[in-house]
Image 1 (tube, rainbow, N blue to C red):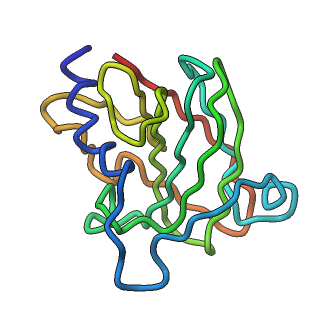
Image 2 (tube, rainbow, N blue to C red):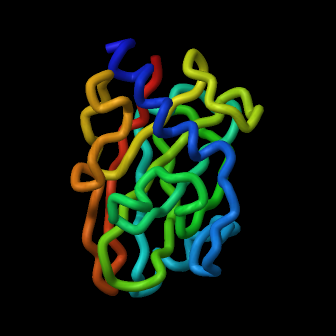
Amino acid sequence: MKFRFLASFAALAGLAAAVPGSAQQYERKLQHSIVPCQGSGPAVWLQMTNVKSSTGNMRVVLYKAVKQDWLEKGRWLQRFEVPAQEGAMTVCMPVPGPGEYAIAIRHDANDNNWSDMMVDGGGMSGNPSLNIFNLGRPDVSKARFRIGKEVLPMTVRMRYL
């Protein structure tokens, strides 16, 4: 278990510091709001379970569900941060429009903006298996979801060492 999760931080570390993208469609920082999930969408009503503590922040990041963007620095579409809440917490991620996307979440438990493998945690849409053999970068097909104009409910299980 420790080896599987340890490797997942290689992928989630990219959530800590992104390199500026060349297109305006990337790297949109949002203020969290539940309003998009109270309407007709498109948005993801995201429940995060197994949050280890109420310290630090949760960074929720939306990617296009394509191999060249998934978990790559500077290739995320939009993200927001919210204070962590131990146990389960629910947030709303608006999406730009109907299509295929993937979500990655990092719990920066000590709020130092770095991925500390022994403290921080992570999770992804689809709850893919994380192990040393895929170096923490599950194929985007394992995290991909399709959304139309609806509000899509989703649960992501957070994982820690």
